[in-house]
Image (cartoon, rainbow, N blue to C red; front, side, top):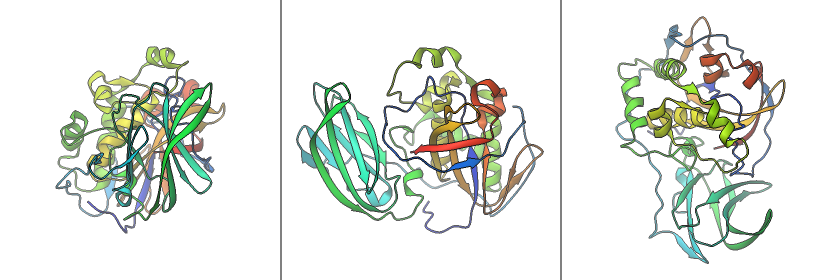
Length: 324
């Protein structure tokens, strides 16, 4: 499902609670975003209902995927870099080394860094900085936080649409057409009359079903490079904020609804946190939530599910840092 031009309403689904256990420091590049006020939400799990409107919804005929094309990838020292699908919103890398590796993606004065498995297993990263002249670099750790460049490829990126990077799987939102989270998304969307229905149904299910894993957060609080697994979150019905954001993105993207994973800070205590941004046609209005046409509204999934307060602040002030 291509979305080259659409008049849309935006929804921000903040898959919340502290990122103490789900820090995205494994991707430690990026640019700071603008601080925005959120729409506070006091709703609890168990069904927000409300009225929806907009064009009729029909499930996509196929799930858009992203793949590392070894045949098209450019061989470089210690690995290969695949830029054959940048117009569709993603690039891939594969490399081997005895030391820690990172994939640095640069566009102008913006950059993102992603951990690369040292075993040669490929990863997919989004073209989340829009159009432009990109540099793709494989970097190897030498000592401490110092890295040396092993190889690089440059490529001009012209996206088929601004939504392309957020309609497909990537390293932080990894799924296939056969994934359990995809099957669950199609099940939840079955019978939806418009995209507002889809958002409401997934929102209600997640806030009623997925619980925050305090033990996991504590366990991961001193580590970096955590990568969420949407199917694991679905199976355990628990996770940290990054898990919530990843599962939500997998569900919406597989249904053809553009969805971003965003990490950043939430006031008043600048807690590091993860949430989602989505675009839908139409609207959804209930007692707790108002998704208006042609505007962005913030909905905090975990805050709504558990009354986040101490772990996600008051749910009103958000600072975007990284977008995937």
